[in-house]
Image (cartoon, rainbow, N blue to C red; front, side, top):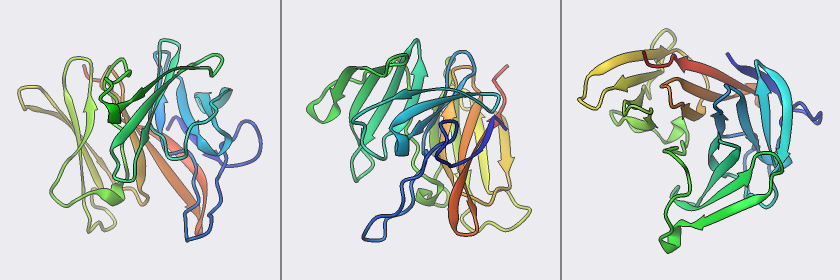
Length: 223
């Protein structure tokens, strides 16, 4: 586990957006990234920032203004922070690139107008396990050598069974590795690193209150 942190007002903790009218849900961090140095980043939407942690210890935060709630696909690389804005259908509508030191907006690409992606490499914006369909694999992404990463879930999960199975598959279709998880909460995001390591963000509850966030490396780098 790379991070296990509770929400709070302190600068070291992520924030929460309380439910609004109409039955909306409490919102916290929903997307993660691992940079080249192994530093973990959260998009802390409640505090309009990207927060960096190393071995579970808070390092710093970068203020990101005017980023809509629900932005996904966090990527931090080469001194830049990337986020994707999605519409109600889950389709990417625009992409944002920020300076990772100052938080200054560097570029914006409107995908609805046919603009090309500004991400330097693939980053699939994951939705939620709640969106999963029985027998249909979720594509999580690819590593630098082209291995594909997929996830299957059991919609009728019981204690002791695999809730999620993540597979590493070669370009030739050979199943190289599998990881089985017996977890009780929905994964909010997966991040496939360039070396093939896979990381998972979970939202955790105390009773019915969302108040905790955990990031785990669920698959080791490819050999």
